[in-house]
Length: 486
Image (cartoon, rainbow, N blue to C red; front, top):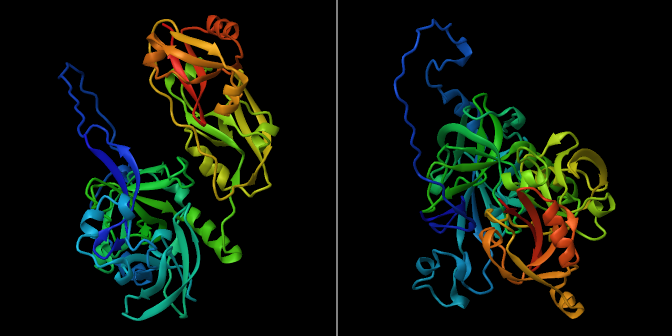
């Protein structure tokens, strides 16, 4: 299978823009089969009327009432310092985009298109950050063909939300829905300007909620709404409506091999966008919280190693010195299961939940610690511009004995490797090799217990059952690796 790419939806000079993340695609097909069996026929009561599909909905009234609040946005990009235009040499389309282009000093300004929607009668408009972030000029065109020069009030790249303002009053504006009430299977309607075709309407269903698309730091602060409503480059920043004509999200990204729509689009929940809008309007920037831990997702072998029957929660693989997490007593091997009563099912849930808290506020963290459930209070701090990088997920488990050859690290080696670990892997065989361990990995702990000597390692492995969670340091990242001992 080829790799899948996440594309932003703005179109620039007829060329699709940035690849945000690379993902491996899953199997394209799934097979199921059933064989006829003898059965007794039992009368079944009719399903409730609300559960039946009685016909396709008519969206004409929704479009008539809300469509006028959707705007077309055109931008003139700031000149690139390298004169290379969008994407630079890493852009997979650069060979087409830069072919036969003039020299950098003569490169004309590039132009882009996107969408947005009016959120108040006095001219405030929400759109995507990637639509206007690098713009020198922004023009908003209404459905009545009036055009206005827009001022960028603020841009938040982490959430991909931007707030702009036009000098007009008495404008039509949208109404907002509650994203927490969205369920997969509900109708979703997108309005925007795909490829410049203004006020195009497409419809589909909500495919899933709480989707996470990793950013450049391997963490995410937006629980995306996934839909199959057709969106394409130029739809960026446009609204996603429910059947009641309420905006539930901002269309932001698509998954595609080609840069065009392939059945999967992602929208920023409107509650996240409105929180960003309010902070941009008040402070000109967005403040987020952090607790100073790196986490990874739990596989079944890792969950069993820590005494959990089912994998859920965010496994702490590293705790930043002096961070709120360290002050609260968090340690590698702890599993964060909730924040202020909100369940954390996957590792990517944690940054999204923590970041929405007010910096300096206290949060009640549910933990699985030493194979027991407990709670701790953590006072958050401000998330700085460069967040801590989350640990990558571990490899698959193997079988048999551990299969590690280790030796003590010398003090100068510890300093060179920037590690507190005392044991370095020299050779890997058997289950450790199958689990993805490598020569040069520094062994830090087993099942949450710190190991400083070969004797410590042997003791903790002997205490373990059929599987262990081995904490290692590889380069600058700490990760747990599940190893099946058979």
